[in-house]
Length: 221
Image 1 (spheres, rainbow, N blue to C red):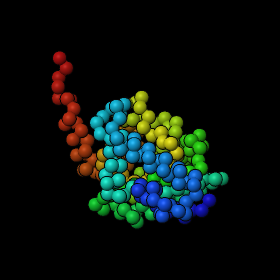
Image 2: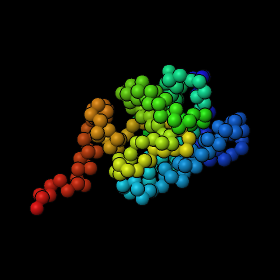
Image 3: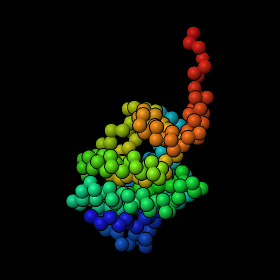
Image 4: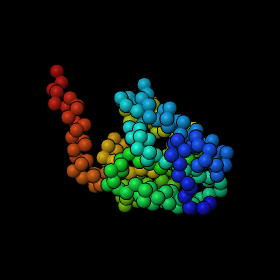
């Protein structure tokens, strides 16, 4: 499996014959399936989400700024280490395209679509890859990876019965961690410690803002 990363495409380019002319039909079909899912589901509210706003609060801004890129990859007989090296390449590429601290750092992502990967294999493969990659990428560069595939059991933060991470084709997104990520890390002491170390005083203010909205001062009567 080559470790060189693929061409990146914006959403509107996936419907343009010119930019996608070099793609195999199954790769293009997979990219379009994920892009359609993003536009019809991820950026929209959902009655089971447990909060107001779109399923993912970061994606609408990325789409508006033309900072949401799609890349096709094939796994074939690749090993876990092959995929680790591949995703490390996307980590570097993302940092080059969208440096930390840039104006749109919190509204940009690369979606790496594994066009020949089954959902069943994705579960194990992504878990093994992120076990090696997730912590050092966050500690060193503040990069967050997110796995999506059909059958993903991860629940929504505000509704444990809702499963928002089930995509039509397996993919992993690459983005900068943001101060709002505390919700994802709150129940994991080791990750929350890394988050607090990265955001420091900003993390305190984010949590204080959440506490101010809660009725914790009210005495039970």
